[in-house]
Image 1 (tube, rainbow, N blue to C red):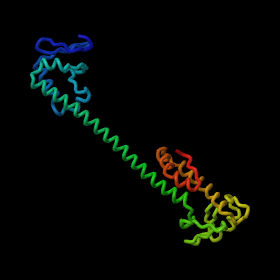
Image 2 (image 1 turned 90 degrees about the vertical axis):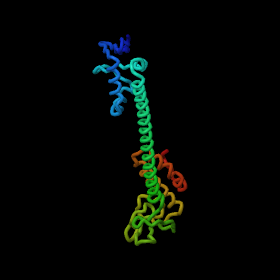
Image 3 (image 1 turned 180 degrees about the vertical axis):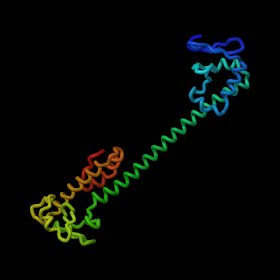
Image 4 (image 1 turned 30 degrees about the vertical axis):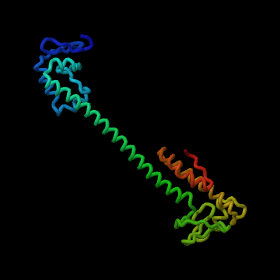
Length: 239
């Protein structure tokens, strides 16, 4: 025989390996198959793909089904084939289980990312896109020309250029604020105010999105805030 094939020899089966051959009589073969078919050995069959290895220790050759069919009684051969089928079922179930676990992991990861994106989007809308008092976080919209603002909800005086908390009087800060783009030290047009806030929001948005380490979350957040940012004239530079 070539390549470790199994030869039939009288009332038994002979394994012809490359360096040795092993003969087993039909009775011992039947006992070996019975042992191999024990339910507790099912997990071990995964290592051989459900095939019956030669009974000899450390022999890597396998018996062919046609040889087993000729040398085993129908009942023993039936048990052998049933065990092979159970191995296939066990393997398929295992593959299905692993696939389900993979999909579940992907779902959990996606849900976690979506929850994270929602949290990030809320923070961007609250802290970057919405103008707020730097002390009490009350939102404000009105602009009357003077860039030294007083919060309507708390005693805070703050700069309309950079939104810095200036304590009890914002005028000294406003006059020398590095973000001031108007010629007048205290007053600005609505267009100048909007330009300054657009630049401020752009800088903060770039820093926030750029600071997110996870690429998928960063891209998802960029897509989530693109529309509200565009309404304010802010470019989302990701995605």
